[in-house]
Image 1 (cartoon, one colour):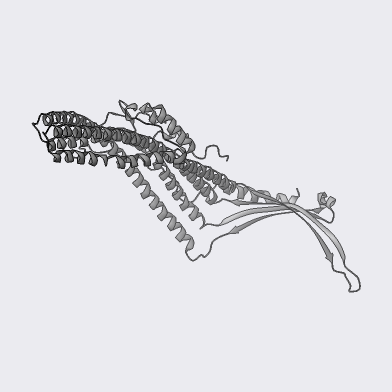
Image 2 (cartoon, one colour; image 1 turned 45 degrees about the vertical axis):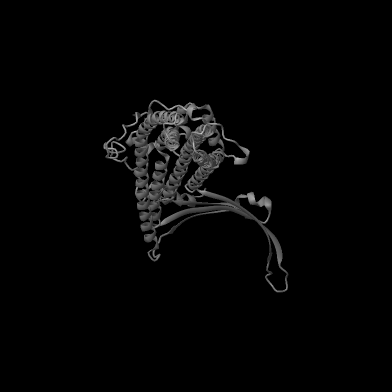
Length: 490
């Protein structure tokens, strides 16, 4: 290269060294975990008879396939199918892929931009005198042009950092979709098992009603009952038949919902037959410590990534207040013949450093920075709200699990008493020592307890699943740990 070109070397060294300069704007600091040692106060609801706490093992790792604690192969297969086929999860994964490509795109702006150009033209040159005719000539040119924005104040690096935070957010959204999907599949399957048990219970109730009607008809034939007793027994039978249709409707809706969760149309897929008795309750449950929950739940991590992006946006806006310098250069060759393009004398080059500094924008740039600060404050409030809502969810589920055990035991004892009462009333009515209304009242009470017991048993399984979801559902093991920038070339 010529001596004149070497004169640019000191300037190049100075300008390129500027890319290691400081970055304006605040550096993001991850919020500290909330300074609490538990999920709720020790007084429970503040009422006598609060349930004892669930036997949860705090600090234990939550398995990624947490639904396997129910020991149901059919449930395991169903969740696996949902993870493979669910469209909401597929959309979240596609959004993550898009965010990672946008991160790569943002990182490309840190490197020089080089383009090639080529052209061919035919020109007619004007004659020196009016009597002579002009001549035509071919003009060929080829060259390259490069530009490099010098990131003196870190605006470009802040944009790359922001793209990385948004990619992290997309990754955590995949985790949130994973946890939500697995939780919905499990709770919907438990709902199906509960509704099937309730339908079987209603069938038993109708069988008891038919026994009452048969008994009354026998007494009527023997002259020991009035026709009105037959009508009363028939009325009770018909009234109880109305219990089944709403439950069957809920069962159909749950089956349809489960089909969509696993990526199938309801008309082309039937849910497996889940039975509540085939599911197992774990002896104890793993639970995250309050200090760890913020790192376990993907929705909290997603909110933190949004907060990070909002913090970086302040630096991006502030960098607009400072000058921007771009280094550009070109190398070209022009000739009247193609072979001449490669000859030395036809080459030309230039190197230019240009600067643009904001002077007056009507206050728009400073308003842009203030808006970014306000957006950060909004994101910070939303992050704190997400954390508090997560702690509330865990506290609610832990309390519910304690209450579930008490409710199931109370319903079981009440069922034993009510079934004995119905049998005694039926015997007494057959012996003429009790009225039909007393028998029907005892049976109605027993029906309510039977259905309540079935619902209480199912609710206990539901709340176990809800606890795993509230604790983050083991998403980090299932979706892979590490930053969303992993695997993205620098």
